[in-house]
Length: 163
Image 1 (cartoon, rainbow, N blue to C red):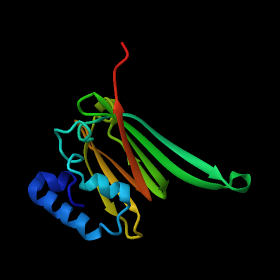
Image 2: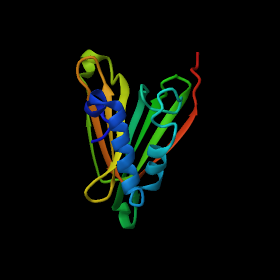
Image 3: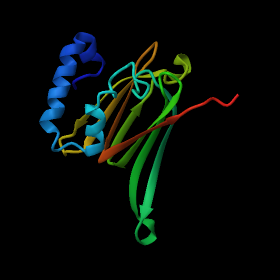
Image 4: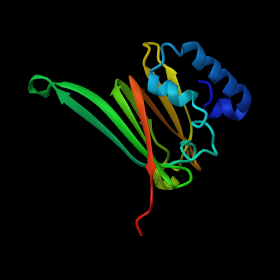
């Protein structure tokens, strides 16, 4: 891991440099959408409205697309929607062809929800698939999500609260 909580808390500048070096070393193997996100100027810029840091979870949907005879060929996808950190955008992550996922939450009863998206990083698994690891901040304990997939699509859209 390169830029998750433990690495950032120890030395954020060195962690960012190591992560950038890692991304450049595997760029030709990295899924294109994830590489574009991870190397963009804005994704890890906490002052940018599109950066997920401090975003709040609106929804997570796990779905299966079915094809083939009797719809027996199944592909798992995950869609996560955040209310952006400045509460003016909805940030949507759509994970394609998910092969593995693990979602561990905080103590939701005592913490009042997931709190916010703390840190995340994209990296490659030993099999060459994308791993997106996300840490959720909480008062008591941090949640951790691991999603392994072929690639991720990111979109953002304007949000206005209906009164």
